[in-house]
Structure formats: structure tokens, C-alpha cells
Image (cartoon, rainbow, N blue to C red):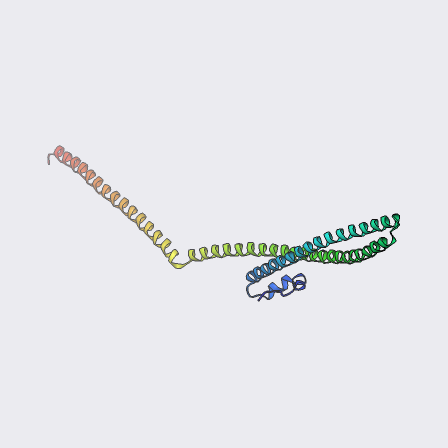
Length: 218
């Protein structure tokens, strides 16, 4: 079942109101565009048929106009030749042709009005369809931005999860342990150097003491 049912429903439709009430605005606006396009096809087909009928009527009108002129000329010719009987018959034919001409003239005027109305309806639907397409484009852009924002929020959410921070914490702890080991190794090496320096200093002192004892004859 379509959103609209008649031409006036489309023209008078409050698009914003319909979208506000719709559960799925994007789906609703697609249905609107589809029905408008279907309506346009029907209107254009109907208008084309009317234009074709008018063209046919116009050809008949021109033929009737020629017939009126032809029988008028024949009536004048018959009078000039003294054939009043033929002139009367020619005038009768002219009268019938004139009646046909008047009828066709009315048909042409009627077709002109119908075609004018049809073209006006087509223009109104096309204008409405253009507005709906613009509305749809705006909605599509808003939906795209919303999806992008949602994706960004999801990325941030995942980044803020505990597991992620735990991985960072584990990395920081590993770095801290490495630094601590490096400090410990540096301190161990430094302590060992000091011990050897102490031993070396003791050797020097022992040598000096031995020299003093020797001098003292001890």
C-alpha cells in the first residue's frame, strides 16, 4: 500500500509531519519517492496520450477548414455559372463542414485545457519530488555522520575497556622491572669494584707496614 493515493495527497502532503510520525523515516521517504515517480509516469503517459489525440484532432480541424473553404469556392463558382442548384448543394456541404469545424474547434480547446492541467500537475509532482529527494539527501548525510560518530565512539569504548588498560599496565610493569634490574646490576657491579679497590688499598697498606717493620728491625 502506497503512502499516497491521489494526486492531491502528494501535492498537499506535509512531508515533515509524515516523517516525524514514521517509525523508519528513511524507509518512509523512499516509499514517497517511489510513489511520486510512479505517479509521474502515469501523468506523463496520460499527458502524452492527450497530446497525441489533440494532434489528430488538429489534423481533422485543418481538413474541415479546407472543406469549408472548398465548398464556399464551389458555391461561388456555381453561382457564377448560373447553377444555383449546385450552389445550394455546395452551401449545404459547406454548412456541414462548418459544423464539423466548430465541433473540432471545441475539442481542441478542451484538449488544450486538459494538457495545460496535466503539465501543471506534472510540474507540481516534480517540484515535490525534488524537495523529497533533497530531504532524503540530507537524511542520508545525517545518517552517514551518525554512523561515523557511532564507529568513533565504539573505538573509544574498546580503547577504554579494562583489558586494554591491563595490557598497558603489564607493559609498564615490564619496563619498570627492566629498569630495576638494570639499576641492580649497576649497583652490583659498583659494589664489586669497591671491594676490589679496598683489597688493593689493603695490599698497599700491608706493604707499607712491612717496610716500616723492616726498617725498625722487627
